[in-house]
Image (cartoon, rainbow, N blue to C red; front, side, top):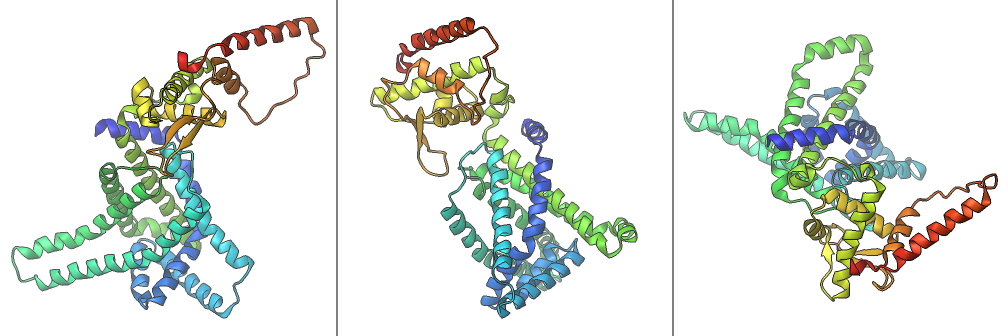
Length: 405
Protein backbone atom coordinates (compact mmCIF):
# COMPACT_ATOMS: atom_id res chain seq x y z
CA UNK A 1 0.00 0.00 0.00
CA UNK A 2 2.89 2.33 0.78
CA UNK A 3 4.34 1.59 -2.66
CA UNK A 4 0.97 2.35 -4.29
CA UNK A 5 0.67 5.69 -2.47
CA UNK A 6 4.26 6.71 -3.34
CA UNK A 7 3.84 5.79 -7.03
CA UNK A 8 0.43 7.50 -7.14
CA UNK A 9 1.90 10.70 -5.69
CA UNK A 10 4.78 10.66 -8.21
CA UNK A 11 2.40 10.06 -11.13
CA UNK A 12 -0.04 12.71 -9.84
CA UNK A 13 2.72 15.33 -9.83
CA UNK A 14 4.33 14.19 -13.10
CA UNK A 15 1.01 14.24 -15.01
CA UNK A 16 0.14 17.72 -13.65
CA UNK A 17 -3.31 16.69 -12.40
CA UNK A 18 -3.61 19.99 -10.50
CA UNK A 19 -4.01 21.71 -13.89
CA UNK A 20 -6.60 19.13 -14.92
CA UNK A 21 -8.50 19.77 -11.68
CA UNK A 22 -8.50 23.51 -12.47
CA UNK A 23 -9.87 22.85 -15.98
CA UNK A 24 -12.60 20.58 -14.57
CA UNK A 25 -13.47 23.25 -11.98
CA UNK A 26 -14.10 25.77 -14.78
CA UNK A 27 -16.19 23.23 -16.75
CA UNK A 28 -18.18 22.38 -13.61
CA UNK A 29 -18.98 26.06 -12.94
CA UNK A 30 -20.38 26.38 -16.47
CA UNK A 31 -22.37 23.15 -16.35
CA UNK A 32 -23.62 22.93 -12.77
CA UNK A 33 -26.86 24.88 -13.39
CA UNK A 34 -27.84 22.95 -16.58
CA UNK A 35 -27.06 19.61 -14.92
CA UNK A 36 -29.03 20.58 -11.80
CA UNK A 37 -31.89 21.76 -14.07
CA UNK A 38 -32.02 18.36 -15.80
CA UNK A 39 -32.01 16.51 -12.46
CA UNK A 40 -34.70 18.79 -10.98
CA UNK A 41 -36.82 18.50 -14.15
CA UNK A 42 -36.72 14.69 -14.00
CA UNK A 43 -37.46 14.79 -10.26
CA UNK A 44 -40.48 17.07 -10.82
CA UNK A 45 -41.76 14.64 -13.42
CA UNK A 46 -41.90 11.98 -10.69
CA UNK A 47 -43.09 14.50 -8.07
CA UNK A 48 -40.15 14.27 -5.65
CA UNK A 49 -38.33 17.52 -6.38
CA UNK A 50 -38.58 18.50 -2.68
CA UNK A 51 -36.43 15.53 -1.67
CA UNK A 52 -33.87 16.33 -4.39
CA UNK A 53 -33.71 19.95 -3.20
CA UNK A 54 -33.07 18.83 0.39
CA UNK A 55 -30.38 16.41 -0.81
CA UNK A 56 -28.78 19.17 -2.88
CA UNK A 57 -28.58 21.46 0.16
CA UNK A 58 -27.10 18.63 2.26
CA UNK A 59 -24.52 17.85 -0.45
CA UNK A 60 -23.50 21.52 -0.46
CA UNK A 61 -23.82 21.97 3.30
CA UNK A 62 -20.40 23.60 3.33
CA UNK A 63 -21.58 26.09 0.67
CA UNK A 64 -25.13 27.11 1.78
CA UNK A 65 -25.05 30.43 -0.14
CA UNK A 66 -24.01 28.68 -3.33
CA UNK A 67 -26.66 25.96 -2.85
CA UNK A 68 -29.43 28.57 -2.47
CA UNK A 69 -28.13 30.54 -5.47
CA UNK A 70 -27.98 27.45 -7.72
CA UNK A 71 -31.48 26.32 -6.69
CA UNK A 72 -32.73 29.85 -7.47
CA UNK A 73 -31.05 29.77 -10.89
CA UNK A 74 -32.48 26.31 -11.62
CA UNK A 75 -36.04 27.31 -10.67
CA UNK A 76 -35.77 30.46 -12.78
CA UNK A 77 -34.34 28.46 -15.69
CA UNK A 78 -37.15 25.87 -15.55
CA UNK A 79 -39.84 28.58 -15.37
CA UNK A 80 -38.41 30.39 -18.39
CA UNK A 81 -37.90 27.14 -20.31
CA UNK A 82 -41.52 26.16 -19.65
CA UNK A 83 -42.76 29.52 -20.91
CA UNK A 84 -40.60 29.23 -24.04
CA UNK A 85 -38.28 32.17 -23.26
CA UNK A 86 -35.04 30.11 -23.28
CA UNK A 87 -34.86 28.63 -26.76
CA UNK A 88 -32.39 28.27 -29.60
CA UNK A 89 -28.92 29.53 -28.76
CA UNK A 90 -29.48 29.50 -24.98
CA UNK A 91 -30.62 25.87 -24.96
CA UNK A 92 -27.77 24.81 -27.25
CA UNK A 93 -25.25 26.56 -24.96
CA UNK A 94 -26.68 24.78 -21.92
CA UNK A 95 -26.46 21.37 -23.62
CA UNK A 96 -22.96 22.17 -24.87
CA UNK A 97 -21.70 22.94 -21.35
CA UNK A 98 -23.08 19.62 -20.06
CA UNK A 99 -21.51 17.65 -22.93
CA UNK A 100 -18.20 19.50 -22.48
CA UNK A 101 -18.09 18.69 -18.76
CA UNK A 102 -18.81 14.99 -19.26
CA UNK A 103 -16.32 14.72 -22.14
CA UNK A 104 -13.65 16.57 -20.11
CA UNK A 105 -14.16 14.21 -17.16
CA UNK A 106 -13.95 11.19 -19.45
CA UNK A 107 -10.80 12.57 -21.13
CA UNK A 108 -9.15 13.17 -17.75
CA UNK A 109 -9.84 9.57 -16.71
CA UNK A 110 -8.75 8.21 -20.11
CA UNK A 111 -5.45 10.12 -19.80
CA UNK A 112 -4.84 8.47 -16.44
CA UNK A 113 -5.58 5.03 -17.92
CA UNK A 114 -3.55 5.75 -21.12
CA UNK A 115 -6.67 5.18 -23.24
CA UNK A 116 -6.51 6.82 -26.68
CA UNK A 117 -9.99 5.90 -27.92
CA UNK A 118 -12.97 7.79 -26.49
CA UNK A 119 -16.62 6.76 -26.55
CA UNK A 120 -18.49 7.33 -29.79
CA UNK A 121 -20.95 10.25 -29.88
CA UNK A 122 -23.93 7.88 -30.03
CA UNK A 123 -22.70 5.89 -27.04
CA UNK A 124 -21.85 9.08 -25.15
CA UNK A 125 -25.38 10.46 -25.60
CA UNK A 126 -27.02 7.14 -24.63
CA UNK A 127 -24.79 6.53 -21.58
CA UNK A 128 -24.99 10.03 -20.13
CA UNK A 129 -28.70 10.44 -20.83
CA UNK A 130 -29.26 7.24 -18.84
CA UNK A 131 -27.11 8.63 -16.02
CA UNK A 132 -29.11 11.87 -15.87
CA UNK A 133 -32.36 9.94 -15.63
CA UNK A 134 -31.06 7.48 -13.05
CA UNK A 135 -29.32 10.10 -10.88
CA UNK A 136 -32.52 11.49 -9.26
CA UNK A 137 -33.62 7.92 -8.45
CA UNK A 138 -30.22 7.16 -6.85
CA UNK A 139 -30.38 10.42 -4.89
CA UNK A 140 -33.88 9.55 -3.65
CA UNK A 141 -32.79 6.05 -2.60
CA UNK A 142 -29.70 7.33 -0.72
CA UNK A 143 -31.81 10.01 0.98
CA UNK A 144 -34.32 7.33 1.94
CA UNK A 145 -31.57 5.14 3.42
CA UNK A 146 -30.33 8.08 5.51
CA UNK A 147 -33.87 8.80 6.76
CA UNK A 148 -34.45 5.11 7.61
CA UNK A 149 -31.22 4.90 9.62
CA UNK A 150 -32.01 8.17 11.42
CA UNK A 151 -35.55 6.95 12.25
CA UNK A 152 -34.29 3.60 13.56
CA UNK A 153 -31.67 5.43 15.61
CA UNK A 154 -34.34 7.65 17.20
CA UNK A 155 -36.44 4.59 18.00
CA UNK A 156 -33.54 2.85 19.72
CA UNK A 157 -32.51 5.70 22.03
CA UNK A 158 -33.65 3.76 25.09
CA UNK A 159 -31.78 0.58 24.07
CA UNK A 160 -28.45 0.66 25.88
CA UNK A 161 -26.40 -1.39 23.39
CA UNK A 162 -28.02 -0.57 20.03
CA UNK A 163 -28.33 3.22 20.41
CA UNK A 164 -24.55 3.96 20.22
CA UNK A 165 -24.14 1.47 17.35
CA UNK A 166 -26.94 3.07 15.33
CA UNK A 167 -25.54 6.53 16.06
CA UNK A 168 -22.20 5.44 14.57
CA UNK A 169 -23.95 3.87 11.55
CA UNK A 170 -25.91 7.08 10.89
CA UNK A 171 -22.68 9.09 11.09
CA UNK A 172 -21.03 6.67 8.63
CA UNK A 173 -23.77 6.94 5.96
CA UNK A 174 -22.28 10.05 4.22
CA UNK A 175 -18.84 8.42 4.09
CA UNK A 176 -20.31 5.26 2.53
CA UNK A 177 -22.30 7.25 -0.04
CA UNK A 178 -19.26 9.31 -1.10
CA UNK A 179 -17.13 6.14 -1.33
CA UNK A 180 -19.74 4.47 -3.57
CA UNK A 181 -19.94 7.58 -5.77
CA UNK A 182 -16.18 7.61 -6.32
CA UNK A 183 -16.06 3.86 -6.90
CA UNK A 184 -18.76 4.21 -9.58
CA UNK A 185 -16.79 7.05 -11.20
CA UNK A 186 -13.54 5.07 -11.24
CA UNK A 187 -15.18 2.00 -12.77
CA UNK A 188 -17.59 3.67 -15.19
CA UNK A 189 -15.86 6.80 -16.54
CA UNK A 190 -12.64 5.45 -18.16
CA UNK A 191 -13.21 3.90 -21.58
CA UNK A 192 -11.46 0.71 -20.49
CA UNK A 193 -12.12 -2.22 -18.18
CA UNK A 194 -11.44 -1.35 -14.53
CA UNK A 195 -11.50 -4.15 -11.97
CA UNK A 196 -14.00 -3.25 -9.27
CA UNK A 197 -11.73 -4.76 -6.61
CA UNK A 198 -9.05 -2.18 -7.49
CA UNK A 199 -11.55 0.69 -7.09
CA UNK A 200 -12.60 -0.16 -3.52
CA UNK A 201 -9.65 1.29 -1.56
CA UNK A 202 -9.24 4.41 -3.78
CA UNK A 203 -13.00 4.95 -3.55
CA UNK A 204 -12.96 4.71 0.26
CA UNK A 205 -9.93 7.02 0.57
CA UNK A 206 -11.47 9.60 -1.80
CA UNK A 207 -14.88 9.33 -0.05
CA UNK A 208 -13.38 9.88 3.41
CA UNK A 209 -11.24 12.78 2.13
CA UNK A 210 -14.29 14.36 0.50
CA UNK A 211 -16.37 14.12 3.67
CA UNK A 212 -13.50 15.53 5.75
CA UNK A 213 -13.29 18.44 3.29
CA UNK A 214 -17.00 19.06 3.83
CA UNK A 215 -16.58 19.03 7.61
CA UNK A 216 -13.57 21.34 7.39
CA UNK A 217 -15.54 23.89 5.36
CA UNK A 218 -18.53 23.65 7.69
CA UNK A 219 -16.48 24.09 10.88
CA UNK A 220 -14.07 26.76 9.62
CA UNK A 221 -16.57 29.59 10.12
CA UNK A 222 -13.94 31.97 11.54
CA UNK A 223 -11.85 31.70 8.36
CA UNK A 224 -14.96 32.10 6.19
CA UNK A 225 -16.13 35.18 8.11
CA UNK A 226 -12.74 36.87 7.61
CA UNK A 227 -12.97 36.03 3.91
CA UNK A 228 -16.46 37.59 3.81
CA UNK A 229 -15.06 40.77 5.37
CA UNK A 230 -12.71 41.13 2.40
CA UNK A 231 -14.94 40.03 -0.49
CA UNK A 232 -18.42 40.69 0.91
CA UNK A 233 -21.26 38.81 -0.83
CA UNK A 234 -18.84 37.88 -3.63
CA UNK A 235 -16.91 35.62 -1.20
CA UNK A 236 -19.17 32.62 -1.91
CA UNK A 237 -17.86 32.26 -5.48
CA UNK A 238 -14.08 31.96 -4.82
CA UNK A 239 -14.74 29.72 -1.82
CA UNK A 240 -16.96 27.50 -3.95
CA UNK A 241 -14.33 27.41 -6.73
CA UNK A 242 -11.66 26.43 -4.20
CA UNK A 243 -13.94 23.70 -2.83
CA UNK A 244 -14.55 22.41 -6.38
CA UNK A 245 -10.84 22.35 -7.23
CA UNK A 246 -9.92 20.47 -4.05
CA UNK A 247 -12.79 18.04 -4.73
CA UNK A 248 -11.56 17.34 -8.27
CA UNK A 249 -8.00 16.98 -6.95
CA UNK A 250 -9.21 14.31 -4.51
CA UNK A 251 -11.16 12.60 -7.29
CA UNK A 252 -8.18 12.53 -9.71
CA UNK A 253 -5.79 11.33 -7.01
CA UNK A 254 -8.14 8.40 -6.32
CA UNK A 255 -8.40 7.66 -10.06
CA UNK A 256 -4.60 7.62 -10.36
CA UNK A 257 -4.40 5.31 -7.33
CA UNK A 258 -6.93 3.00 -8.99
CA UNK A 259 -4.76 2.84 -12.12
CA UNK A 260 -1.56 2.24 -10.13
CA UNK A 261 -3.23 -0.52 -8.09
CA UNK A 262 -4.35 -2.36 -11.23
CA UNK A 263 -1.01 -1.85 -13.04
CA UNK A 264 1.45 -1.90 -10.14
CA UNK A 265 4.28 -3.68 -12.00
CA UNK A 266 3.97 -1.32 -14.98
CA UNK A 267 3.81 1.73 -12.70
CA UNK A 268 7.33 0.92 -11.49
CA UNK A 269 8.45 1.88 -14.99
CA UNK A 270 8.25 5.68 -14.80
CA UNK A 271 9.64 6.62 -18.21
CA UNK A 272 7.38 7.74 -21.07
CA UNK A 273 7.80 6.58 -24.67
CA UNK A 274 9.02 10.06 -25.67
CA UNK A 275 11.98 9.62 -23.30
CA UNK A 276 13.07 6.41 -25.07
CA UNK A 277 15.56 6.86 -27.90
CA UNK A 278 14.24 6.51 -31.45
CA UNK A 279 16.67 3.61 -31.98
CA UNK A 280 15.14 1.59 -29.12
CA UNK A 281 11.59 2.54 -30.11
CA UNK A 282 12.18 0.94 -33.53
CA UNK A 283 13.64 -2.21 -31.93
CA UNK A 284 10.67 -2.58 -29.52
CA UNK A 285 8.17 -1.87 -32.33
CA UNK A 286 9.88 -4.57 -34.42
CA UNK A 287 9.58 -7.05 -31.52
CA UNK A 288 5.85 -6.33 -31.13
CA UNK A 289 5.22 -6.49 -34.87
CA UNK A 290 7.19 -9.75 -35.09
CA UNK A 291 4.84 -11.51 -32.65
CA UNK A 292 1.74 -10.08 -34.40
CA UNK A 293 2.92 -11.07 -37.91
CA UNK A 294 4.23 -14.50 -36.88
CA UNK A 295 0.97 -15.49 -35.17
CA UNK A 296 -1.06 -14.25 -38.15
CA UNK A 297 1.18 -16.10 -40.63
CA UNK A 298 0.95 -19.35 -38.63
CA UNK A 299 -2.84 -19.09 -38.33
CA UNK A 300 -2.79 -18.55 -34.56
CA UNK A 301 -5.18 -16.30 -32.65
CA UNK A 302 -4.27 -12.61 -32.38
CA UNK A 303 -2.91 -11.20 -29.10
CA UNK A 304 -4.20 -8.48 -26.81
CA UNK A 305 -1.91 -5.70 -25.59
CA UNK A 306 -1.59 -7.41 -22.21
CA UNK A 307 -0.56 -10.71 -23.84
CA UNK A 308 2.00 -8.95 -26.05
CA UNK A 309 3.39 -7.13 -23.02
CA UNK A 310 3.77 -10.37 -21.06
CA UNK A 311 5.41 -12.19 -23.99
CA UNK A 312 8.05 -9.52 -24.52
CA UNK A 313 8.45 -8.21 -20.97
CA UNK A 314 7.85 -4.60 -22.02
CA UNK A 315 6.05 -2.08 -19.75
CA UNK A 316 2.34 -1.86 -20.60
CA UNK A 317 2.30 1.95 -21.16
CA UNK A 318 5.17 1.61 -23.66
CA UNK A 319 3.47 -1.37 -25.34
CA UNK A 320 0.20 0.55 -25.76
CA UNK A 321 1.94 3.66 -27.12
CA UNK A 322 4.02 1.68 -29.65
CA UNK A 323 0.92 -0.23 -30.80
CA UNK A 324 -0.83 3.09 -31.37
CA UNK A 325 2.15 4.29 -33.43
CA UNK A 326 1.99 1.11 -35.55
CA UNK A 327 -1.74 1.68 -36.05
CA UNK A 328 -1.19 5.31 -37.12
CA UNK A 329 1.48 4.09 -39.54
CA UNK A 330 -1.13 1.80 -41.13
CA UNK A 331 0.77 -1.42 -40.39
CA UNK A 332 -1.68 -3.00 -37.91
CA UNK A 333 -5.40 -2.91 -37.14
CA UNK A 334 -7.06 -2.94 -33.74
CA UNK A 335 -10.17 -5.09 -33.41
CA UNK A 336 -12.32 -5.62 -30.34
CA UNK A 337 -14.75 -3.95 -27.98
CA UNK A 338 -14.75 -0.25 -27.18
CA UNK A 339 -13.44 -0.86 -23.66
CA UNK A 340 -10.14 -2.00 -25.13
CA UNK A 341 -9.30 -4.72 -22.58
CA UNK A 342 -9.94 -7.53 -25.10
CA UNK A 343 -8.92 -5.58 -28.21
CA UNK A 344 -6.68 -7.68 -30.47
CA UNK A 345 -3.94 -6.56 -32.86
CA UNK A 346 -3.62 -7.88 -36.42
CA UNK A 347 -1.58 -6.91 -39.51
CA UNK A 348 -3.44 -4.48 -41.79
CA UNK A 349 -1.49 -5.70 -44.85
CA UNK A 350 -0.08 -9.06 -45.92
CA UNK A 351 2.84 -10.31 -43.85
CA UNK A 352 4.78 -10.85 -47.13
CA UNK A 353 4.86 -7.03 -47.47
CA UNK A 354 5.76 -6.13 -43.88
CA UNK A 355 9.51 -5.77 -43.86
CA UNK A 356 11.97 -4.08 -41.54
CA UNK A 357 12.45 -1.42 -44.20
CA UNK A 358 8.69 -0.68 -44.26
CA UNK A 359 8.62 -0.39 -40.46
CA UNK A 360 11.61 1.99 -40.31
CA UNK A 361 10.30 4.09 -43.20
CA UNK A 362 6.77 4.38 -41.78
CA UNK A 363 7.91 5.23 -38.24
CA UNK A 364 10.46 7.80 -39.41
CA UNK A 365 7.92 9.53 -41.67
CA UNK A 366 5.25 9.90 -38.98
CA UNK A 367 4.11 13.46 -38.33
CA UNK A 368 1.42 15.82 -39.56
CA UNK A 369 3.68 18.69 -40.62
CA UNK A 370 6.12 18.10 -43.46
CA UNK A 371 8.04 21.34 -44.02
CA UNK A 372 9.88 22.06 -47.24
CA UNK A 373 13.60 22.21 -46.53
CA UNK A 374 15.72 24.38 -48.84
CA UNK A 375 18.93 22.55 -49.81
CA UNK A 376 19.61 24.59 -52.98
CA UNK A 377 22.56 26.44 -51.45
CA UNK A 378 24.26 23.20 -50.40
CA UNK A 379 26.47 20.88 -52.45
CA UNK A 380 24.13 18.92 -54.77
CA UNK A 381 26.56 16.02 -55.27
CA UNK A 382 26.85 15.35 -51.56
CA UNK A 383 23.07 15.49 -51.11
CA UNK A 384 22.59 13.01 -53.96
CA UNK A 385 25.15 10.77 -52.26
CA UNK A 386 23.23 11.02 -48.96
CA UNK A 387 19.95 10.11 -50.70
CA UNK A 388 21.62 7.14 -52.43
CA UNK A 389 23.04 5.81 -49.16
CA UNK A 390 19.58 6.22 -47.61
CA UNK A 391 17.90 4.34 -50.49
CA UNK A 392 20.44 1.51 -50.29
CA UNK A 393 19.93 1.31 -46.51
CA UNK A 394 16.13 0.98 -46.74
CA UNK A 395 16.41 -1.34 -49.77
CA UNK A 396 18.55 -3.75 -47.74
CA UNK A 397 16.11 -3.56 -44.83
CA UNK A 398 13.16 -4.26 -47.20
CA UNK A 399 14.69 -7.67 -47.90
CA UNK A 400 14.13 -8.74 -44.26
CA UNK A 401 10.54 -9.71 -43.40
CA UNK A 402 9.42 -8.91 -39.87
CA UNK A 403 7.87 -12.36 -39.41
CA UNK A 404 11.29 -13.99 -40.07
CA UNK A 405 13.09 -12.16 -37.24
